[in-house]
Length: 112
Length: 411
Image (cartoon, rainbow over all chains, first blue to last red; front, side, top):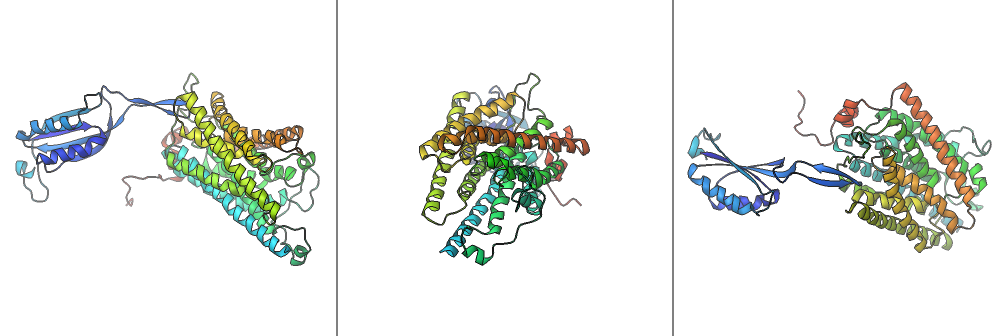
């Protein structure tokens, strides 16, 4: 079991959700996040004075999957949000030790 | 016929008073939008409290000080109390009385609140709430009414020929002078100026609210200037009122356009908050004489005001006078501009009288305010502690947040 954590541009969220649902993925969690990578921040202007936004608004998307789904999920997310330009985001994959569905007490792959 | 005119004028004055009262909401929204989120509750508290204080103080001593039955001399009217008796029906029917005493009080009292509202935005985000409210008691009870007596109340500025239709000087520049004294004694907000003196942006939290505030003020201004004709019954008065509305509206529009264009050419982007200040600058400038100019002249005056306000804001920033909402520039610089423009359109007004009025009103309100601010600073302090300023005045002064997250009952 793996946890995919994808940092994406906020306006791509709906597309990603639809594409992942088509793969048969049943659930996901999103968090409004802020951050920067190579894109860095940008400057804004208020009453003639510039100020810097270091941390840009992003969406952090988390999906727990069985191992055999991981490659397809990564491909789907990359294809959906990728524009080829800086600031598209990043995908992290981590191993999951144990998963529990609270309602039934089911564990691991049957809980995904 | 006299009865009908009296009733209509009184009704008109009361409706305009309600419009000007609503400007308190405009100032409140403008200021709440232009401060940072952590100072929202405090600026709202300040604005509602100052309105209430202005109403009570002006009723108790202000109105009697500004409009005495018989002033002692041109400079000092003598203390009185409350509002004089209402007109008797026989006196009204005899002619020469245009509207009710109570309606006049109602129309006057909302102007005091406007002057005080101007101060609140300029000293935002760093002044102690209770020191500000103590200052409001003195400004609305004594400082404003006394200088108001000198002109509108029939004192020495009136005798000199000083001309100020709806109060570019008496209300707006007076408020700005009090604000300037406060800003000067308070110092800038923490972090506003870099060690090398460069001005930093401290962006306002809610620009939709600030924009709504601008429109509310613009609407209220029809009562402010339109009502200052003090009559609507009759062809001449009705025509004057309509002309004042047109000129007021055009000056605001022109001020907005000018500020938008100037900010665009200076900064390379359309700067919304400068643009909002531009509309208010046009409104303040036309207030000294909204009746005499042609509509084209009103546009010209508004355009000049829109340019003046942007450069005034940048200039005050250079002097490290930190005015978060631009109140001193909008009401002070453009108030002076409006007063100096009066003689261009009105042959009865003169530059000497206007300059005298500017110096007397501006100088008196600035010095009297500085004295009160100074005494308050000595007695209880006027500035919050640095850690309270950084945490936000909402927590320090009001113990609450405008947008509390993760709150629960506390038990």
